[in-house]
Amino acid sequence: MTPESVGVKQTSLVMGKHSGRHAFKDKLNSLGYPDLTDDVVGNAFAKFKVLADKKKHVYDEDIIALVDDSLIVDNKVNAITLKSLKVFAGTGEPQKAEMTLDVYGDVKNASETGDGPVDAIFKCIKTLYPHDVNLQLYQVHAVTEGTDAQATVSVKIEEKGKTTVGQAADTDTLVASANAYINALNKMIIKRDKTAPMEQESQKVRGI
Image (cartoon, rainbow, N blue to C red; front, side, top):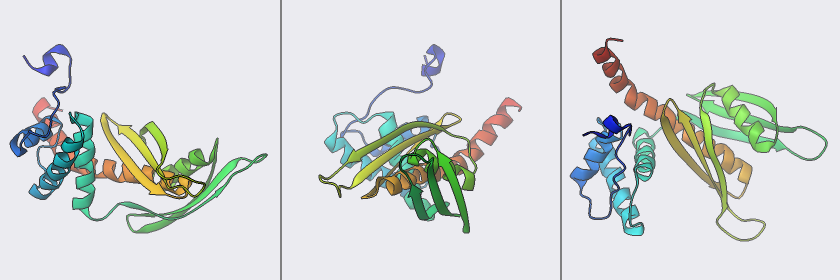
């Protein structure tokens, strides 16, 4: 009996610190990463062992995040990078963001208003790099104390069943928010490229 036969898309079995490299590669295959380079697998497996020493169980979502981070490292060049950001916030006026991004080497500028400064920032990113993803999580953590505390922002996005998580830290929470979203987008772009050949082959098999 397969997980699919009872309506489960993937196994819910967890891995731990005693799981070996072969089991890790099998897990990657089941999660939709069949053709990763040895460097990416090795980088992700090393991070997995470190994480497994800290956690009793490592879940599928943990492994996906590790692989996505390793793909970013292996790819070396991000498709999108933040060049500058200005945010105008306060009472009585719409929140506004002005942003400059480098998108595949093309420097672009945009200005957007939103329901809040973060909403305006995310709208700028979508204007400069048009895309259609679902924002599933936006979370801010203060990692130090005081008014000059460094904030770590986590952003989780979803596109056609694929999810990526981006993180960034900065003493400016709004800069961290922009970089976290861009980090998630860069991972999604890489994931699209890595899985596109596999999806095309699957469509051929189904006669699409």
